[in-house]
Image 1: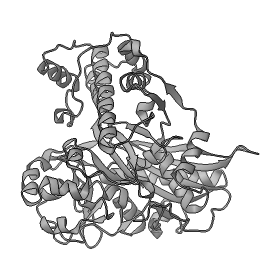
Image 2: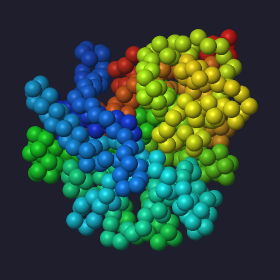
Image 3: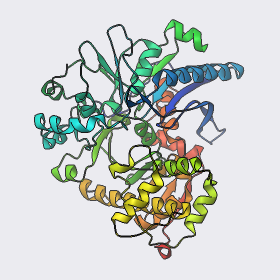
Image 4: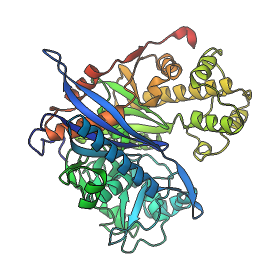
Length: 496
């Protein structure tokens, strides 16, 4: 795989070109228009984002399992693209291309005619748990890691596929690739997301076909790979007419695993940085040139996933703000709807040294009464956590910050790197308490922002492919720095 940035695959975009990012997370989605603007004499360029459509997302129980309502999700994507077309037309702009990013590991199965056979399972469904042992009997975990470099999670795609009863005549499309297929009719698998399946060779940058064979899966179960910056296809006539965009509007592969797009937009001006993509999940790690495939890395459960421009996202997938959002959901059901700012302020006022949990514990994966589960987890440590929202919130924040610090220390040791600064991007970058605690516990400066890192990374890869931006990741990140006000947190040892 090439490790230099791809060249633009079209002539430079015309003036007035804008780019549409379809950015979908596990709890919500957005369609965002992005513009690369000149700031004036000597001021360089900047990136401007405009959200044109928001919609909810979440797992639903269908046919006895936790699945994604993909039909509803795709309908929202079309509404968002229609809104993007309208906004662009009013402002005399042209939507140059569309990029899609979502969460990883989940997929839909389509038949030879392109029909989706069922609503895709969610990684939060427990069906793949029983597949882990049979897979490991055929493929030793050490061998799996030595090739894929992938962190073990029971919901990785490899285990989900092993739970399928009949794949004859079907093809698997990861969620962003499924959306791209329905838009263009072209079946491709974007490489950053392919690297999360457990069926991808971390060194070769290709499918690990021997693993597919060992599990009795066809070598063409997934479509061919495409790299960020390459064109997947143009809009189908019916789709173009429905959303009001020209049929020649391109769908461009971006870092379709949302974390790959987020890391591409980390505003790092230094080489040795750690990143925390903080949202529903926390993705904590380093950016490397080569994977770390040692036994020590496997035992530490670190993952080596592809990033934009052939980089390696060396990280650990940790629990995240799902813990707090699920607590808020439970409290709301009980009639208590605390303002999040007031809740975090009350949590910050509590003394340090309170009880902590392991935010990665599998007991927190499925939706349920999260406050009760957190208090039960604390009891198992021999401590007591009051049934008080502020105390529970502080427990979550302390636990996440401590987990971040452990993960960064482990990454430094395993990759033989020294971290100078920690960048927090995504929704968690707005959480001042979490950012300050992270600075305190890591002993490193924390730079927080941008919130919309995923959409920015998506837009910047599209802009570079169209000739509206140029250079490698350092140049793209410089645009992010120029475009956003970032917050800096320094360690306050008195708080520990």
